[in-house]
Every structure is written in structure tokens, then in C-alpha cells.
Image 1: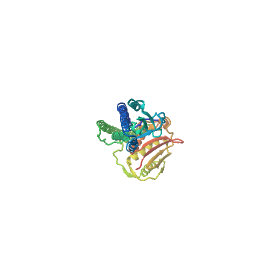
Image 2: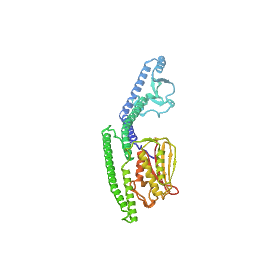
Image 3: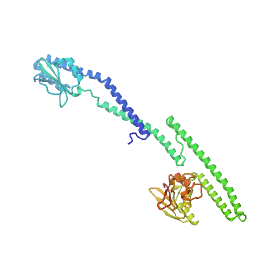
Image 4: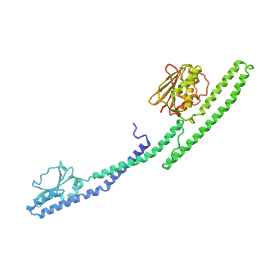
Length: 433
């Protein structure tokens, strides 16, 4: 169970909230330590003053006017004064709710002549004092004797905490959005795409990160362009002498043993095929603009070309609307997959297209030996071959890599899996919108 959020924005917001809560707790602690004790010591002062005034007024009034005075006090003041005619020893109530510091302050002022109790239901404070032989109760409401933080103060503290968290979230959200753009650009490079330049805005650290990423992306594009140019140049230059060698061997057919002549021509054809793969690998197809076309028609045309050359390919094409894609790149991808299936799987080749929720699935299946010694998807990497399980065949090991690059260029990818009953399935999945 994960206790902390996994995102930067979540962790930062949680940290800021924790810091604010800790600061509020510390503030409450400071108030309780340095401000509450003086308030507690001072809260007995108005109660003492009230008792003194009540005693003074009752002592000065004649007996026949005391009831009228008590009625006026009880009607207009925030406390009550009640005459007690019970015996002095009678006492009902509880002393548990009486603050210790308040009882000590009153006892220090009036001595043992005062009696305190609290009402069980209302928890009001009752203080009994004598006046010229008559007992009276001073009844104070509970809120007059307890120190409580005002509700509006607690509301403002909570509101300040919420505003601080929201503000921190908005600040971190902007930074997180810029970091997310860097992440998406890095993923696009991983897919073989060319990302646009990142906006160099925001704080110095984010701006430096965006600038450094733009420089890195520019350097990678330049390096890849130079690599592809060099590979294309070498492949093109090597094909010219190979062509001359083949022409020379064919012209010298009578002077060379036929078997040796045939083997040399076959080797030259293999070398020429390898160089063609290098050229296809160097041409990534990004220079071709996507066009609105029928994907099934491209698949049908490519398969028909193999049918003309004597290769039997079974097709099963699903219906889906035309969409934009790079036609030449898709032809190259499908040709490489079919060539791979023919090279290793013989004549039982099947090509299937499926429409799955606005995504196209292209399957090229064969009935060869499959891939048993290594995970099938390992063969998608450049120059990786598995001759032990798929036969000792020629090729540079770039056909599947080229197909995967074209699929990723279109927002999809290539995967390989062994087929039930023997053979291999190459699956290309990409959006068709």
C-alpha cells in the first residue's frame, strides 16, 4: 500500500499542507503556553467584581426592596442572583466542571465563605455568598467561565489553510505541466519521432532543462541524419561494383564452371539484398507526407505483387474507413513482413486486417518453425537474428526493425509471437484516425 503520492505535484502539495499544519499546531501551542495562562488568571476578575457589586448592593438595600432589585438584575444582566433559603449545610451539584484556577482565585479573595457548584444539565456555575445572614446564589452561564477559541477564528484558520494548499497546487501544477511536456518530448524521441522545440519559459531551472533538452534533441537529429546519410552512401557505392561483378560473371559464363558461376551470382544477389535493407533502414520515411488512402487497397496491391511472382498469400481484410498514412512507408513495412514470412515460413502465408475501436491491426502469419530459443520480440532489434530456430537464411536482420520503425512512425508498434500449431505471427497495431 503506497502512502505517498507518486507524482511530483501530489508530493509537493502534501508537503506544503504538512508544513502549514505543523505551523498551525505550533501557533496553537504558543498561544496556549503564553497567552492562555494570563487570560485564565484574569477571567476571575470580572466574577469577583460581580460578586462584590452584588454584595454591596444587597447590603445597602432595605429588605423590602431586595426582591425588586433581584428581578431587575435577572431580567437585564447576563447572569442571575437567586435568594437561597435552604440550610447552610445543604449542597447539591457537582464540582468536577469548576476550573481549578477559577476556584483558587475566588477562594483567595473571599475565603471559605463562598460555595461553588455546577448545574448537571446546563453546567452553569453557581456561586453562593452570604449577605447579612442571608444566602444568595450568583448563577453564571458556562460560556462566561470557560476559555474557548471563537468559531470564526477556527473558520479563518481553516480557510487560510485551504487557500494556501490551493495556491501551492496551482504553482506546482504549472511546473508539473512543463515537466510533462519534457517527458512527452522524450517519449516521442523514443518512438522515433521528431519533437518540436520546447518553450523555454518558467523558472531558471525549468528554462535550463527545456533549453538543454532542445539542444540534445537537435544533436540527436543531426547525428541520426549524418548516420543515415553515411549508411545510404556506403550502400549505394557498394551496389555499383557488385553490379559490375555480376555482369562480368555472366559474360564469363563459358570460361567459368557453371556451378561456381551460379554460386557467385547467388552471393552477389544476397549482398545486393543486404545493401537494399541498409538503404531502406537509412530512409526512415519521415520525408513522405501522410495521405488519405485506403489501407486495405495497399495491402491488396502488395499481396497481389507476390501472387504474380508465384507466392500464395491468403488475405482476410476487415472494413474500415480511409485514413491518413504514409503509403510508401506502409508498402515497405508490409513487404518486409511478408518477405520475412516467406523466407522462414514457406508458402503458407496469411495477411489479416482487423478494425478494433478506431485502431487497425495488421497480422502477417506463417507456418514456419517459429522462434523458440529467445523471446520473439528480441528479433525486432537491429541486426538480431535467430538462425538456429528459423533456419540458416540470408539477410542483414533489419527487416523487422524497418517494419517496427514505420509502425511507430504512425503511432503504433510491432510485436511478434509464436503461433499456435507452429509458425510466427507479426502484429502491427496503429490508430486509423
